[in-house]
Length: 136
Image (cartoon, rainbow, N blue to C red; front, side, top):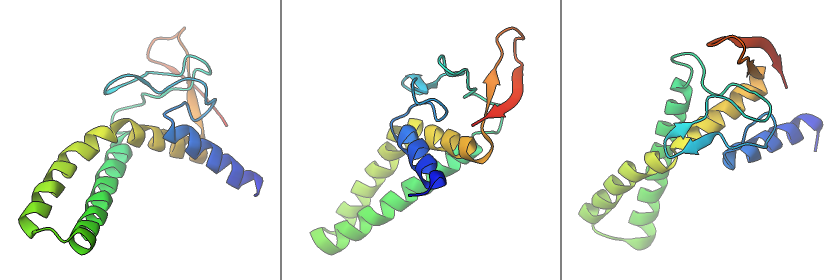
């Protein structure tokens, strides 16, 4: 495995476990539907400017659609339920899955951003400012 592949797998593994993509020490979540502002360990900024997490929303929607498609195919071909039962089950899945995948979509989006350009560091000496250097 090459160095880049190892780094990608490491960041992906951290993202799936909802850990900071930069250091892997702290959780990105501080509670249900609450993402930390920054990592308490390495100071990487999690909450960014408005609109930054549209990609996380897109990832959540696309993953939900993929899961619904796979569930529909399995349900219709292997289980063989009536179409009304399948639609009711898929409707429930469509309501629950995005809620359960919420933190993972944020984490995967942060991991993707970390791999592409690194994460800015939080500077608590200047409220609302972030340090411009991006380290990987």
